[in-house]
Image (cartoon, rainbow, N blue to C red; front, side, top):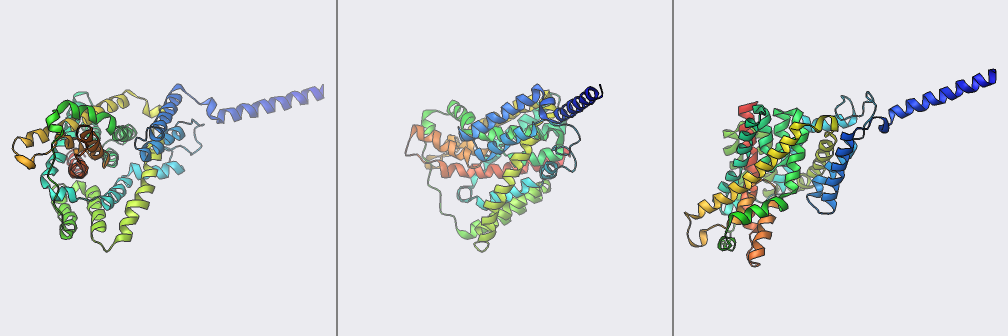
Length: 390
């Protein structure tokens, strides 16, 4: 009897230990929401690898979704929203807006503003595309979002992931995951979303307009641009300094000719590391319990709306400009889509669609003008929203 009792006690001990172990595994804590988010993460990875839609963004975000939606027993201090956890420490760069300025530093160091400097009126196209931001802001207000939330959602229309993260970290931290994923998703889908809109708004005659070759830009102009650009934009919108100052600083490193090592570091190592950390941690933040909400669905819908409006405004504005231009000064409306801030993908779309109708029409260099103007425009728009809403 004593042997049987001891055996029963041992079996109960084993069962209790196994039961306790099972409680600590993910299988005991899985919900249907976690499964949905893991499938979405796999889809993002598929788009990044198979379709090559912004793989540097979608692969880290998709993998982060897998990591963030592996459920665990509460209190293990491993979750991205748990203070002291390793992932939470890395996520501080997103929450506190440290990463976006570093991204802008790298963008400035790798961007050639010659196309914009050779034809300054192209900056107006970049400005026109920002109407998508304010259109989505108005729509979000109409749908019941608070003004600060509407401002953070509207910036998606700029097609600028770092700017969206920076602004949402200041105005609507609770919505940051949905806003960041939405912004990066639509950036990746530029080649899918924009071409139908461009074809719809243009005639065959407009699509084959050949633009005058851009003039040669002097070195002194390239050096002066980041200095003058900083003073002009940041004195008007001081709240945009964290992004605009880093953008222009990175460009000065590139164009000065004496800080090549710093420019290379900014445009390679710094931007690569920062992009990886942003993608992974933003993906991890999309935990099913906080991400799968009605607000998230609304954010994705409004993001698509703002992106479409931005593309519409950019193309239509070129058509309006052409009413006042003559001869070889006319602008091909197909570069209007490039007014959004998705550099250089939006400019590539201009070239690809233009080549469908005339293989000898090279629009890429011209499209880079409004494209880089869109980077500046989205940062200025973010500064305006931040000044009024924070």
